[in-house]
Image (cartoon, rainbow, N blue to C red; front, side, top):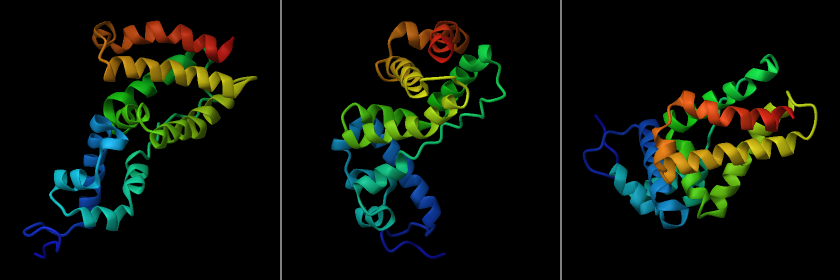
Length: 188
């Protein structure tokens, strides 16, 4: 069994090590923000040398870019009834918020880093905007921005600020509150 040159006793598996580094980076960027996260800290979390992080990702920004690579998985909305659009979106956003550390790390980092904020804007411009443009009659960029502001605000308040009424809401309760607002943005 060969071991890595970077840390004695560590089994060599580049793909697994990169995955561990990305998970550690998401945690660090999420808790410490972009500016305070260091390559050395991420490497230390995984038990490798910081030079290995540079070898795999090139720089802190390269590491962040890969760690913040987020696919919201928004389905094709063209076959969804207009009245069901907000439910499909809220359900999808809950899945992203609760099943993927990437989104919340990116959201937390975006509050303090222009690099992270740009990455979040890219996610919405590249994924939410086109998905909504396919099902709205007009003003798709404005509609997408309002949907984004609503879901980002809810996610920030529930998962980062941990406001008790929002933390305590079930998905169905959140859907009951968010649904009419999103329907208004999408259809009116």
